[in-house]
Every structure is written in structure tokens, then in C-alpha cells.
Length: 55
Length: 252
Image (tube, rainbow over all chains, first blue to last red; front, side, top):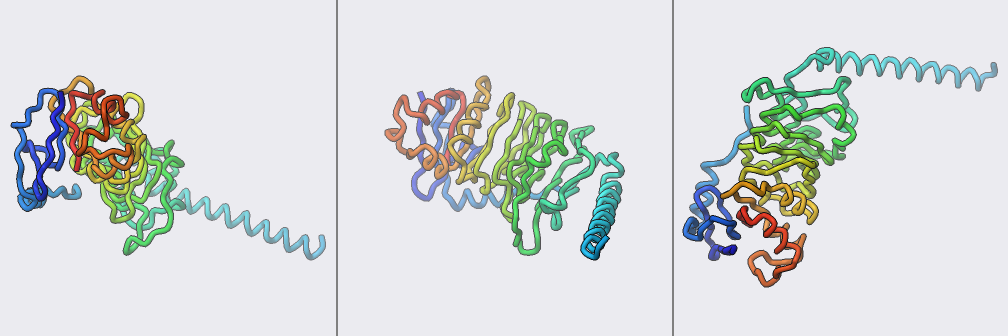
């Protein structure tokens, strides 16, 4: 049975690895594995993880 | 020989000499650039301005063979290719016309391979790739709009692999996704692409997540992914996602 998790407005859901507004959970995944963070927190994480061109 | 015949003859002679000179210049350039076909490293080899549908036409077939994971021989190979200052470019390079000249099947590090390249119909067998981050990302130059792709269980690093210019992704037979992967930036991805991708998600792995653009899925399937009543049991999207119940589907 799948669980559909939808972030509140202005929030982002994460399992610590993936950051999205909607998660349709596969087998073995628990809603408890996901937390909501604010969009501002997410933007900060994105900035830190920004991929660079490989040189 | 009358005067008209003489003029036509002279023009034919001129054209013949011109064509021969042009061919000689082509040979000279590519013999140098490709070291008479012996060049093995194309790190950012076709990157930047000047490569157009007319000029990107190697004389010798190019098969990149990464000798180790850290060889980097194909990294950024077409980064911002087919560009001009300010990104003001005219035509897409139709990579299918060059498919027999490029072989990526033994590339281990495909990072930035086609990043920001204004190409269509890219054919890329990346079945040996371990790294493919930003391989088809970037829109500075228009970006890659369509790709036929092969990936394998070897793939590990896929950060920002696909960019927002992509409209069609077709997975080659034998492809398998066995790593969490995101197409969240691909807002224009069509229905066939979603089906092709989902059909190649590994059916034996667990704990992996595939992320799609909410806009793309909603448009392609005529649903609202946030509202399950729009894709009830038996509907195409319901059945597709259930065919890979071991995967978490995410949307951005």
C-alpha cells in the first residue's frame, strides 16, 4: 500500500537525500522517514550542494 | 569549343580544384585534431564556440575508452558545443547523423558530457558509466532536447543529470536504472519518455526514489499527482507507478 505525502505550502519534504513537494512512497518506506523543512532551509541546502562543472 | 563551352569548362575546372582544396583542408585539420585517428582523450574536446552542424564532422570514428574510473577522457566533451557569444545560435546539431562516429559505451566518467550542448537526437550508450552528473543538463546554449540513452547498474553519481530543455528521453533496450534519479527539471518531458523511463527502473532494488516534474506528469497524463482520485486503479499512471512498487515516486 502506497502512502502519498504532500508538503504544506511553503514547505519541502525530505528523507535526508531527496527533497520534493510530493512523495508517493514505495514498498518498505515509512512516512516517519520524511520531515518537512521550509523552502528557505531547502534553498540553503541547494546552495551548499550546487554541482559544478568538472575541471 | 565555343565561348560558352569554354566558360563552363573553366568553371568546372575551378570547382574541381576548389573541392580538392577543401577536402585537403578538411583532411589536414582532422588529421591534426584527431592525431590521424589515434587520439584517445577528448576531455572538453568539442566544447565551446565554433562547433556547428557544418563543422562537427570528425574524419575518424571516436571510441572513448576510459582506462580507469579517473580517466576523464570524455568529461565535458560537448560542453556548450554549437554555441556563439551570447548563446545566439541558429540550428540544432542532429546527433543521429553522427551516431556512427561516436561510441561512448566504454566511458566510465560521463560528467558534463553533453552539458548545455544545443543538440537533438543524441544517442548515448552509457552502459559503462559510473558518473553521469550534469551529462545532459544545462540550458545556457539551448540544451539537449532529445536523447536515446542506455544506462546500467554501474551508474552511481547522477546529480543534475538531466536539464529542462529535454522533451524526449528514450531508454535503449537493456537499460536499467538502479540508482535514485531525478527528472524534476524536465518540465516538458512527454508521455512516451515517462513510460520508457519507468519501464527501465530496476524491479529488484529497494529504497530508491525517482523524481519527476509535477508539471510534466500532469500534462502528459492529464492528471494531478497530488490528487489520487484523478488516477484511479486501472488508469495509465496508476498502473505505471504500481508496476514499480519498489520505487518511491516523487514530484517537484
